[in-house]
Amino acid sequence: MGIEERIQELEDKLEETPVNKATETERGRIKGQIADLKEEKQKKQKSTEDTSGYAVEKKGDATVALVGFPSVGKSSLLNKLTNADSETGEYEFTTLDVEPGMLKHRGANIQILDVPGLIGGAADGRGGGQQVLSVVRNADLILYMLDPEEMREEEIKQEIYNVGIRTNIEPPNMKVEKKGKGGITVSSTVDLDIEHDTVESIMHQKGFVNANVTIREEMDLDRFIDGLMNNRKYIPAITTVNKIDLIDSSKVNDYEEEYDLLISAKDGKNLDELKDLIFEGLGLIRIYMKEKGEEADKDDPLILREGDTVESALETLPGDMKDRFKKAKVTGPSSKFPNQKVGVEHELMDEDVLELNLRHLS
Ligand SMILES: Nc1nc2c(ncn2[C@@H]2O[C@H](COP(=O)(O)OP(=O)(O)OP(=O)(O)O)[C@@H](O)[C@H]2O)c(=O)[nH]1
Ligand SMILES: [Mg+2]
Image (cartoon, rainbow, N blue to C red; front, side, top):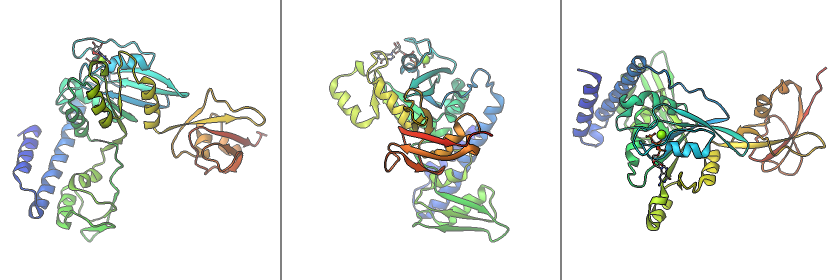
């Protein structure tokens, strides 16, 4: 029996197994097996498929993947946002390769990848989907595009889920420590809904004989299995509806409630808002560098990420600034008052002005 059939068989079995406490261990075991088989299948496909032409080098400060079914308007949007000139067309699969473009916004260089239209089953390797999805796995942000005349939202999001990408959630808060003896033990800081037996059977199946697993959040079986798999990717995502020039205003109101942003690539509607949303979704921040006694350089900010510190700035700037660092002065959202003196550990925020006091090279 091939992998495909084995997965199908297990999925059928899962479907037939009632959901209750008594069957939980069994369901956990089946889910674990399915996760393993899917991983095995992906690995096989990776090794047999030709990946040339899809390997896109990451460039710029961050990378965004445009994800949507054929003809939702990905190439049209890429052309509007970036310097790219990607072919657009009324027929499906106009774009066959991953097309890159560079968006310059708020001083950041954001690489946008127009990913060829996904089709149902792309996760299974159809339509060259596997290579496409590996590009998505390496993106820093996923930008979903939906077509109001054929939303298919669940379907596209399932494709992404099926290749081990989890969007807009943190990785499961759990830790597995291998041990020399003692079997499987479970420590938990929360009331666990999953039975100990279930945890044990899944751990065994994943090859753990002696290990302690510490679980620090309430989680279901699927999330627990995610926590054990090391090929899961956690990526932020934005969901847009394109072609809103084609729908009437009552629909527009409904969609506005439900989705992050409604756009029209054709008319250029809401594209400035989209650029801001992308910048924020990537967690980028602008740091304006300032020399002593001069004005801050607001045209060409240093681009960092939320949570970055003065030390990150020193590491990102050219030259061996870290060794020469004496102190820094910050004015802006992260400072308590103008020209606050801070050390390397100080966390910076968007639009801070940063003045570095460096030792002269002797
Ligand atoms: N009315 C309207 N049409 C749009 C809009 N954006 C794209 N289109 C049209 O939709 C069709 C498909 O656009 P593309 O940009 O080629 O779509 P794609 O997602 O790149 O398609 P594939 O490359 O086949 O996956 C073209 O005829 C576009 O002119 C929009 O905002 N409004
Ligand atoms: Mg296209």
